[in-house]
Amino acid sequence: MQYSSLDHRILSLAKSLFALATTLATRATALTALRTAKSDRIQKCVLAPALARQEGFLERSGLYDKQASVPLKKN
Image (cartoon, rainbow, N blue to C red; front, side, top):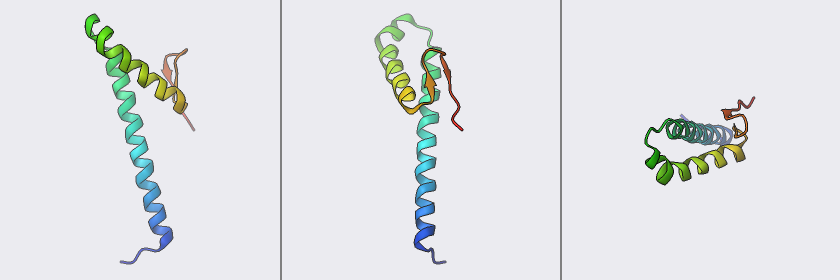
């Protein structure tokens, strides 16, 4: 089966969008896991810096509002 140039671009775009969605879902999951960590020592030493990085990334992406502390939905 032959694909046209447009088909290749559409497939490439679909793959890119899937990769982006997967990355954002992974980051949101990591953020949730970091927030529910039980050990104070682990939170302070390891998780707090990672949480700050995750929040910063999601805020820059427009998917997280640190003030409201809930994910924002983009339409």
